Image (cartoon, rainbow, N blue to C red):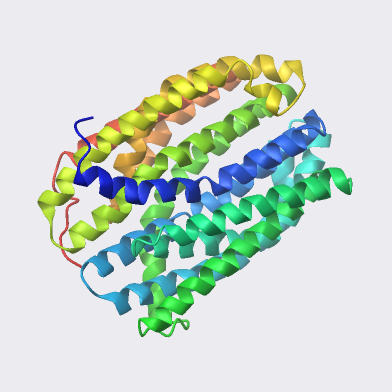
Length: 435
């Protein structure tokens, strides 16, 4: 990158605190993976299935964060503070409604879903237990998304950072006590994580509601506001559905390889999720700053920031790849003593490391276009990319090729995303100015 300047300072001011806030969920997952992994391979496989389902459900609703950031940021950048918090309140109420419905759905379908994704009866039973307990925290997970997105829109990255750090500490303490201290097994890990998520949700929602009232917004449910938040979120929901479908398909294919490869896939997925959220910190800067500059009518500033953030994406992707490559030979020992899991994990991580520079640029461009409200394009592009990935993943499963080839298919998936996003950002259709 060129000399560090004003644009870099603006990016760093958003990206650094966003990084620590973003890694909250993968850190909870990594903590659960390390704690549960000591119980046995079946327990780790059960966590793999359950976490894939939960990450899919919550991931589908990430539009609550992205949509709030784009909407609140654009309105706040245009000087319409009360309208910005009205939009934030609509997102919170939408999160509550969706959370209750989706939590009930997870609980009701836990048996069939665990049976479809599990590699053995033991794994299925453990996954079902984890899902039943975690279903109660789905509304909390969605409230955290909506509240965090709203706070990013007004450039408050400090509050989500503080809340997520404390929630992670609480999660680790509770999980250790419940899993190993009280010998509650995988159920203890689920309870500890659920409690930590509700604490985080309550704290963040309280902050948003107080600020909304200070800005003149009542924060009470408004049908028009909730409907607007839902309508704006549909394209992002569709876009996210294609990403989650790809990850869920990967877990289903990994399960056909056996318990040890599935457990290795869980570790690899946890590490990839951590790195993805870490690199996504620059994408959050893209969402926040793009929404504000477009809201202020600054097309040239938006274009300059986009170019600079692409450079940051390349740099963070290279750093992530080098780090993962260095850790690949021994990182499996952090999670499980099973040698079969280690043997399946190392080649997969080498492939994943090679994909990270591509992923860094993908996350940045995705964030820029989300911040610009270009959700419809992202939805159609996501569908095209999924159609390119699915046959490759299924082929790896039908041939019994192993995890390395499955993750190589993921590399093609990311490359296809890069092509669609790069072509879009070169044009001007997405640069709509004003509130």
